[in-house]
Image (cartoon, rainbow, N blue to C red; front, top):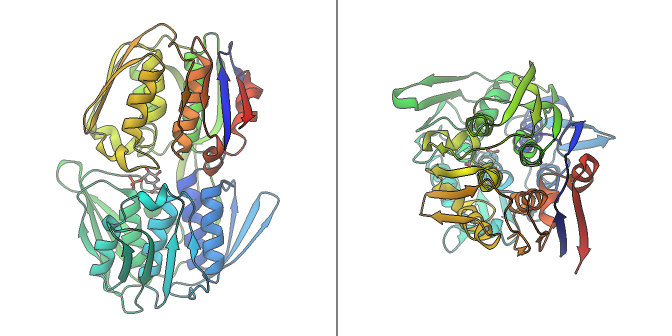
Length: 442
Ligand code: S3P
């Protein structure tokens, strides 16, 4: 384990980019492997999570090559993956595991999926249930946990599911399974969740439509067995990664930072609206499109933040950003309440508990229920001076390192290793901007 210390920083400034979007990177590799012909990907996130997906797709017969920062995927066509001869290890990545289960569900093969202790403790029944309905079979550890062996079918039925929780991973698994089913696959989601799968399938040539139905719910319809052909994809910077330097700049007086080429898909960008409501000065500049996704440059200046209530209906559009938003709330003046965030309990760690207890250790008053987090900021620098357990969770580790930048005393995270899953180069990038973060081998 490598612990990392973060000590209070003076103003940070610069003009940077952040690594590629994790969600889009996984999808580009998987959909590229299912398309006919060659897919060229630039800006792919070369973090552990996405590399696990690349290895798994290779084990399933896709040819994938990398030269410098250009990745080529030679697709096998829909239904064309082959049975792997070894276990597929998806490391820490819930997206890799769940989306891949969808892909495999409509292939006539068996495969065993495993992951690290964090991934192996996460619920998989939410995706196995709908995939059983189309004909896939599973053998799982008790409680529906990994390792899991899936036996897919070459005669998959088209899915027709109404989801209980807004989960892009479950929605995507059903849609990806539907690629090799005859007929229309239909998914109804209660609230809109990130739509990268829908956008990318359409970009590759699939016939997929999205209708708004009652109360914000959406019905997505995919026509099975489409002809999808390889494409060129430029992956935008990940807003979920950008959120860390953004909050670092906001809470470090005198800071002035520009982050170029960030994905601002409205179903991902809830954190910007939330921070702006807290008084953050964030300008969204040069809005444009790449591979069907909206992107922009973000200009951020240090700001005096105030507490805010973040409503439950915004949760799906910023589900991964609550830990870093809690850091902003800890440095703001006044109380912040995050509503409807029960799903945080089943992420890479129980993030509700990790933020409620870790912030308390740092001297910030917090309260948590099953689905809310309340943070009482005073506007003064939190005490810090503690070591926080990162719980195999990259976003918990990065959140507390950012908090260290604005705390009275150094904050240490016990294990910085998980940061590699989503944000390779985080320490160098932050230190290059003026942060004071340092590795300490234990
Ligand atoms: C993701 C969906 C979200 C998110 C995860 C990435 C995706 O999970 O938390 O980091 O790429 O589809 P849920 O689908 O469980 O909400």
